[in-house]
Image (cartoon, rainbow, N blue to C red; front, side):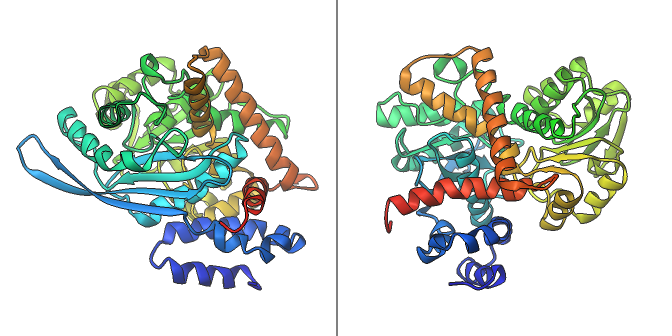
Length: 444
């Protein structure tokens, strides 16, 4: 058995060289559950740690597709089927130039515990490609998606692995992927989530991750007898998660000061209201434009090439991508009065930043705070299985209840006196359910 976290990490790094994001995700989990494992040695005696950090299956494949000029392009496709102890693999597909094996393994590993926290029967997986949809025509994206699914279809199924969307994979891409799956298999199955409402999708699914992060933040604030009313909120990103996090913050009385994209940040001192948010949604979802255009339209500050973390706020909700916040950013946010950090994206804080936030302010780690998306994906799976549709009010209420339950689990295993260690609480809660299922199922 390993005598320390560092010794175990030496083992992980040696087996998975160069996969820095995966190493970071594993260290964060193992560090926070280490003391719990010392008091529950049966997990160690059964080598649960070695088993839980090893994917059950890693699939890579070539994706050849033809662009509008007739040129054949080649990308690489992936699916990481990491853990199926509590249910079929569940996790999104990411299409982005940064995608590689290490990033997808980190995301799939996080997904194991995130899905466990929802209490729904879903294992952990993730997939995607280094294909970047930006600047591509609808026809080119359709060509790529059809080629991608022509290989992926043989590895997924409604009782095996149910992918969803992620960065670069929205309703358009899910539609093309599902259409190709249906054509190849001659089956209309709930094999993807995030589908269109008129062909098997769930109401509130597009909103779910953003709404869920805000619901989780509200539960954290409640522990201090606080709420969103009149709070200044920084949001990074301007995609799906950021848009609906902003919408819910506005509904709860908060003041959204910022949104961003890879080119820079807009800072609206007066606050982004519903009218302005609708303009941003049209800009990003229809025109596929840059956030700078919002600054020009509404004459607000544009911080070119910058992130929003130097702006004074009460609450920060990063919704862009991994490791967008470092220790200096974290120090600045805390110094400027931030009292709550909730991760709308997957691992947007690097290790040093996350540790600082967790020590100083309310900190909601992504595997708990952004579980709303996969939670409603699970509800979509239930609706598909029963051939029914719930109203938006029903799904939203179920989502709110799930986020409250996740918060309660974090409190149960993370409370230390007056302080709640949400990282520890989320990781221990997620680990127990998965590890116990692995023990029940034997040496597999």
